[in-house]
Amino acid sequence: MIKDDDKHVEFIDEKQERKEHRFGSVKDFLDGSLIANDFVVRQLPYIVFLVFIAFIYIGNRYHAEKMVRRNAELQKEINELRAEAITTSSELMFISKQSEVVKLVKKRGLDLEESVEPPRKIVIEE
Image (cartoon, rainbow, N blue to C red):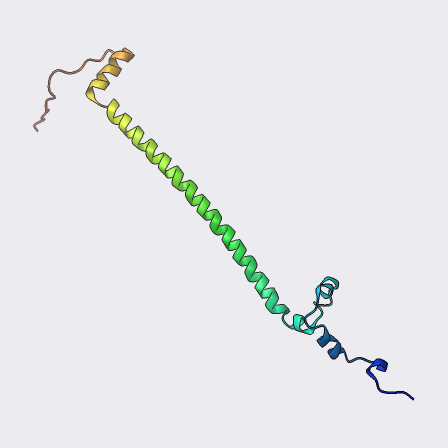
């Protein structure tokens, strides 16, 4: 006599089998059967979307950090150029003083003399 026990069932409904392994274990994850689960397959577009958003987020963060570093470098360069401009301007003001011009003319041996007469205005009448 054959009884209808669960032990002697020849065919197992596929959906029942998958429901038994719904949450899975490490073994299911490693052998890949977890990915074949209906729940995971239905959620696959959402998972791909989340991965895409994560890549965009990571890329945006790297880009922002790169821009911050570039901004810091440019600020440092601006400060150096500002200091150089101030130094150059002060040197030019010092060199263009009348006494310094006279010293430079004598030092270089140019046969120029300082004018002792004040400048005159030339008027041409027509």
